[in-house]
Image 1 (cartoon, one colour):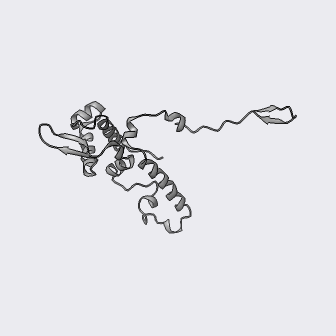
Image 2 (cartoon, one colour):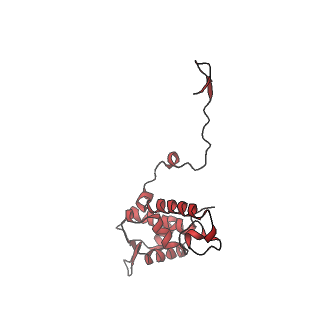
Image 3 (cartoon, helix red, strand yellow):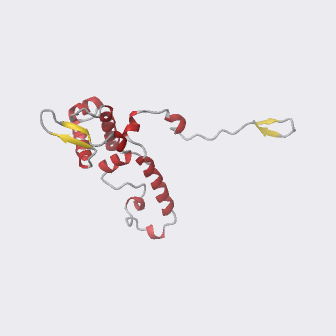
Length: 164
């Protein structure tokens, strides 16, 4: 099953919260308390995000963390790259070319690469700024797969059964 890890989900929560007030300086303790996350987890996330310049840190009495880039310049793909300890890929051959023992003769590899590229592009096109503004995504992206409605047939003036 494809699923975003907790650390990536939490990292997205942290950055989205920070993006709501981008000029504010945040402490790990404040972020943890506000978001209901453990402070060690938030500290780890902030450290990793800082290593990828998605947040900046400052020391001292007024120290803390701020966004390292504008929210619209931070994509979900950036967050995944910063927080995941493995290269992005849906399969071994899309994450690490040469890692799969059957890669050379695999006839489905190119389709996995295509799927991987589409998912990656989508993650690159959704920013932290986008995450700030929930949309009515249930219309565009249903949470469950639904079978298409089968049109009912009705007797028609021509004498045949036609779709309504």
